[in-house]
Image (cartoon, rainbow over all chains, first blue to last red; front, side, top):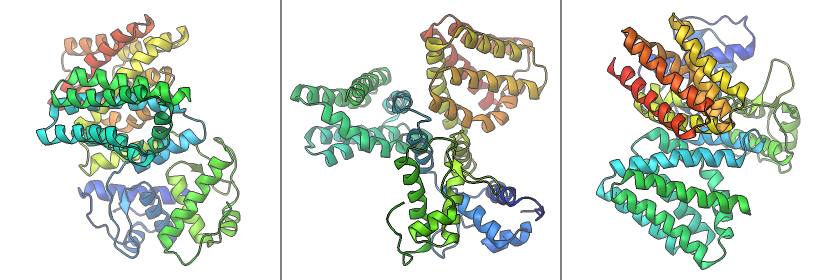
Length: 234
Length: 234
């Protein structure tokens, strides 16, 4: 928050530079999630920009979840939560820049690795939680509980991987999964097809419980093969 | 752009809903990158929100690169370009929510797959471009050209994978690579260490040229093993 920004620059670039100044303030001061930031007016004064420019900069940072601005509360450093990536990927899919098949291949790639890491790192409690998620999927009977259980299964494995970036990227697919999961399950018309998918989930959970990373990878790969067939066949 | 938004709601949620209305407008009308959007004032009128609320909504969408607003120009649908994910991941690293080792494992996971896909899908021209990037790395002598060549090598492979989501995620690591690459190369003090790293890059390029996906995967994995050692040993 040292140098002044000349008001002569175009407005768009003023906002960009004000945004950058806040990011630099966070980095230089080693701020962590939840730490309070100086007020908008304080930044505006120090940078020599107008209040509306500073308000736009705070708005951009809030959109990117880098800061958290409640109503009237002081702005705080924001937590990464997958929603920014979700918005970006959702926009790319909705405007046909990226296909659903592209997204599915990225998911498969990431989740083969989260399954492998989960097998290597899981505690006993975590192994139980993953098995329980697979079991909840088996007893769920309607679209809502099936989608919730299926999502919980994948997100728990990503969490147990111990790498928060994998977890956040996997979470960013949640909204798209909320559409795709019911589609995939409705393609599984027979009891046999349902049972096969449940067995594939269970095999991932068992391989993680057995701490067998390579079996967990392979099981996740086979699960995705099958699900991609179901989704794109319908 | 149908329903009106009641001005009685809190301002933050008004902006969120105005933002959502623009996203819905893009999706419902099947707009593509570069297509023009109705003016801010037009949205404000139809939604029954104030101009400042609508301006904030446009600002948030611009921060997420969903729309592209030049100075004075009409807003257009934006292209995904990796910068939003880069900002999100950069913030998470700078605030210690995610470690560099976490980022490196995500990169390795994604790039083993882009190498495999590139081997399966590359044209002859693309195979040559990847070999050329590996060769440019071999002849580069200073930090700037080495970083540029190393970045070009990884991004070309991601582009040739044919999956634009992989390409954008790999691009989102560019800023972090600009810091890590010089660090990794400066750890390679001897001619032998440099030669080994160049050979690992060349092996990835040759496996892609030979259309051998599994060899390309393995070579990329070994390259990351070695680079991670170099980066985290320093």
